Image (cartoon, rainbow, N blue to C red; front, side, top):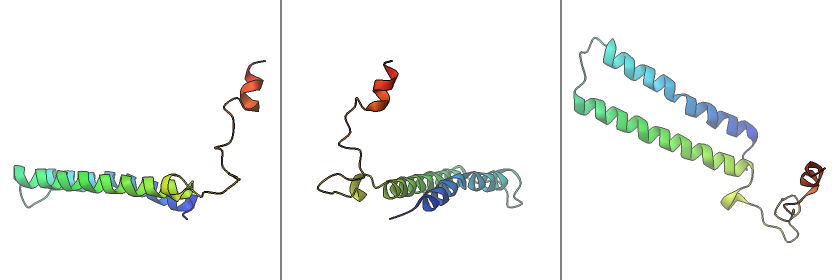
Amino acid sequence: MKTRFDLEQDILNVTIMTQDLDTLLWRIMDSPEGPLTDDDLANIIIGLKYTLQLRGDKLWDTFCQTYELDRYRIHSTNNAGHFDNIDSTDERSKDNDL
């Protein structure tokens, strides 16, 4: 299983996209190589979009592993440590009724 530190790292990896966009802006605005073709620019943006989707997918998977959700959920016979058996009218909601 992954830990909250793995989750933190994956969150930071998603923010790297800003650096990727800065690099693209440099290429468009300041590169000595001249302008990109519309086709090249579209391909770069499609690649960045796909990369961001993959980073988001990885982040979600790490989140699920960290908190044992979905396919990483630990099933036990007595639900120890899980909140499935808590009634929606737990003690906190009773306190709010006062």
